[in-house]
Image (cartoon, rainbow, N blue to C red; front, side, top):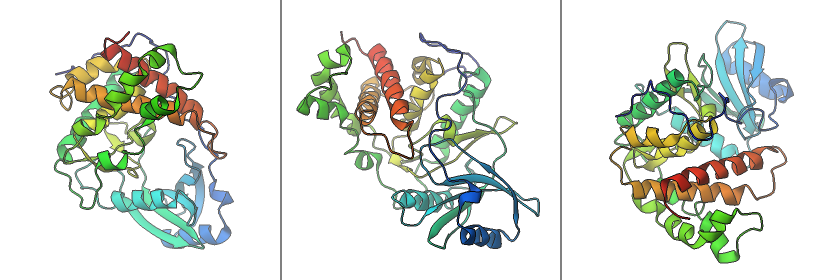
Length: 329
């Protein structure tokens, strides 16, 4: 088992303590919400809002703010137009967060409502900060939380949760798409040489990820809040699905690399992955790299202008990690 207190620095070690997920979208601020929406929220809270601290991390454009009402309470509120293309994601997040087990370190949904054609969800406010994955102690707290998620959420405690294999079936096809239509002109030489092998392995990713664990499926530093006592709270459950208990760690692992921490010793020694067939992990890492590779080449959303650069960076990180796992030349 991996000693979580040991720092594991990767070959591309950097001094970064955070990944590039700040100021990633043009979010609506509290004072930019329609007056009727703000009044509706205050009525539901039972107190006027005297301060709003907007949260700029993430890639969606709805409002996200920590509100301080006059009664001294605190609440984290999200709001988006009810007809926005992302409103369904906001609704799903609220519905799942309201049903999570009490023993789970997660922010519960206090209420949701539609007011003046806006969807609003309110969550428990969590005092803390994003964990710094380059810090050995904070990384250890995150890794313990990943283990706790797997233990607490197996078997899946919620009904009507889709399988990750079905949810991502049409998304994890990047290498196969390149192999069919031709490699992009800017694709790196190694990927071009191995494109057929990448496509073949990618096609097998779903076979190994089936399971009965409730997965967060979007773990990143931006979706984790570390309290001063070291407890890590998991937020933003919009993409929750069912699958093998080890999947969340693999989806999070490129963020270790982004901070200069080699994912390989972590994956080799963590309780959720130490007994998993390496070929199954290879297939998922391969599919993840292909997903980022193809999406990074799409047109940038107007309200999330940094998304494609983020995806391009993580395509490189996932590809480089995958290359270290296999012996392809």
